[in-house]
Length: 109
Image 1 (tube, rainbow, N blue to C red):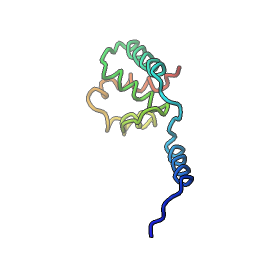
Image 2: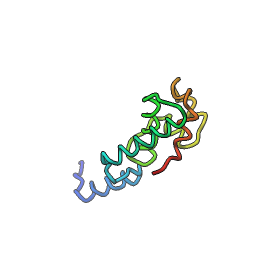
Image 3: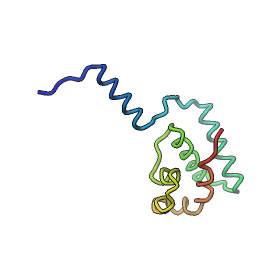
Image 4: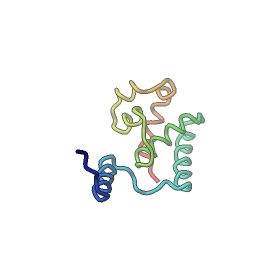
């Protein structure tokens, strides 16, 4: 016989899930998102990079690092300092700008 879980049990398991995946409980506001976009854009421009795809990769990495977005395997490998996995998962664009992307992981507001 399958038992129904109580509301308390469901709520507890949801909190465990949040703790396990370390999901940021602070919502990403438009103002905060714009700040991240500015950080990624300024960093890319300092390196002479104007490609919007590279800026988006940097933005995704920063938002994943701080718990707002899910990251790809490439972004996870970069944040873990796992160079071999980062290279394995990188496409041609990421390989071209790997130095720029890696150097952005330590950007903070």
